[in-house]
Length: 197
Image 1 (cartoon, rainbow, N blue to C red):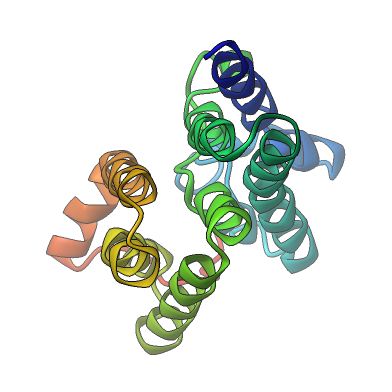
Image 2: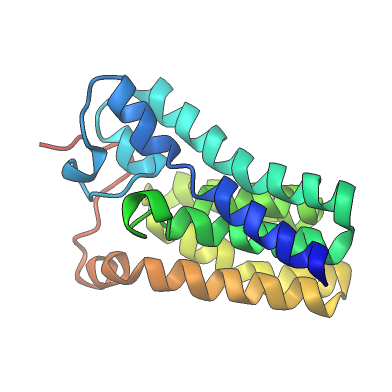
């Protein structure tokens, strides 16, 4: 049980590293929370017009979830990897360094799933990509992809703890997308890559 708490704590600390906030500062954009949606994730970074910076943030945020899972699995086993992965997402969403106002957890969730359950992770990423290609709306792509994750986990792995973690991730991501959902319902959600004024 102690190793699970250690894995969760380490996962939270890793996930709470605000990649987008740091890289935006280093690139000269100032506080990314004052641009576009105010989010620190790759989608909002893309609104600066800097695709390479957005890609770097996407990879770093996804990497946080993947590294948390892989390290915990190496030293603590499967249950520790579940805890580390979940708490890396919570760390990204509620980072102590930014007064618990972080990102929406999509990239970190996808990275975590790719490391924890690769088939589910790949299928979820494909769903995100297909939805993005069709509708060009990042939030809608994330909501649909992560909505599918619990069902994918159930049918592909039949492992209750994994299915439960995927369901919890889905609820957390949807909670963080409350404003996006309201804009989707009113047709006001911006397209991917729309630059901020």
